[in-house]
Image (spheres, rainbow, N blue to C red):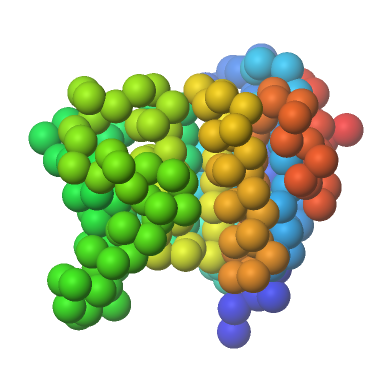
Amino acid sequence: MQSKKPVKIKELTYRYCKEDPHSQVLNSIELEVSKGELIILTGASGSGKTTLLTLMGGLRTGAKGYLEILGKNIVSANRMELVELRKQIGFIFQSHNLLPYLTAQENIRVGLEVHKEWRRKEMSEIEERCFQLLELLELSHRGNFKPKDLSIGQKQRISIARAIANTPEIILADEPTASLDKDSARIVISLLKELAETKQCSVIIITHDNKILDYADRIIKLENGLII
């Protein structure tokens, strides 16, 4: 039975080099995240925020302790198990990672086509979902543009649309508003908050943007690998 808490972390530690105690980045992290909760992680550069986020997303291995994501302790998960886990998570990172040879709408479609349930649907339904997201992020007029013809902020919004296209149970975001102007940042954080409230997504955001702190259900600060 899947845990009611999509994220449960107990005594989680991580070192960049197992043999070097001075390379420890995370120290006995304890954290639980509920369905529908929007959490913001803050802290200085090097405090362990991104390391923690990538461990939760199955993008990094080698931790010790207990790290349960969507009902499974992934500390000892194998490569294929981590691949399947990542399909259930929406990732929003500062590097947009858009495919340069695809249009904005096609890049969003890629976020749907990795899921079996969407591959079974008619193409018209897939395209409608892509267009719906473009409209939500006020980019419907840029759907046929390739990344080279988009601004940095527009690329970021497309990467966000791709990440949330399948309404994942967990969304992990590293500085999602860093390259956005004030209005675009408001649109993005409002959409993430709405997904948390209406779809019961668990949203975990790293940010230095003080303007979005009010949207958080909880603000968690890391310092030297510890939650304080």
